[in-house]
Image 1 (tube, rainbow, N blue to C red):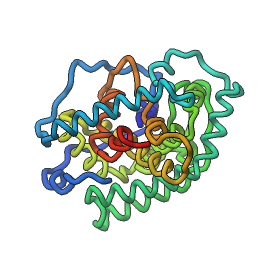
Image 2 (image 1 turned 30 degrees about the horizontal axis):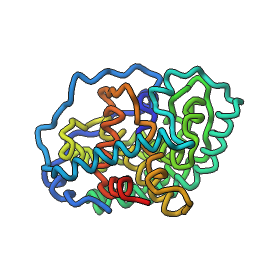
Image 3 (image 1 turned 180 degrees about the horizontal axis):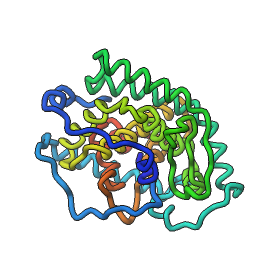
Length: 304
């Protein structure tokens, strides 16, 4: 899920370089947001290597992407797209919408912590980055940082952003517009998870090998250049989507599966689809996540 598209970067160090060919081959089998100025894309950037993707797989991703944005329009709890959030006036902290969002975020934070820890462990196995002594020590440190996050703080000046100050990694700061723009539990889980991955990585680059691995595979599948900070942001969004999917499984409801899953990605359903040096464009983010996790595409297209 794409969140905190620009605000967090001022507090963080860049991520990693490209993935080696061996790691790319080893991970071919898939497992089952914005006040600052963005730099418009001059066109699609392609990577030097590209994994062949079937026409059927690409069509599935496009249909699933359309499903996400169509669900957003029909869903009373659909997330507001981040370009729409940017255009809205600031909300006071004590506004009903901001208060409801802050309460939702605080209530869901413990669940988000558990889901992020599980997702990071699973991704580390999926991408063959676990097992070395150095990484295992780093991932344990990363997970401990996630466990330590206790608070959500609303902030009017942050507007449509969520961010973390690395000098105070126990608190996630939410702009009041962002809090109001995520009216569902699923959308909030996705955003919280995104920020928790940033916290997990910290200033010591605890998750750098995982960011490289995810970016390498995503670059191969999409043809986009995904490295450095883009790699970190995409991995945060991927974890947000996976955590939300696990949350949906753990909390059955009468709502249709595609609708609930869509809420983790809907804030990327923008009209102005621009990326920058640190982020893929919002709609490219949706596609990259769906390429990385075909099971999500199937759930969106065929789920009931």
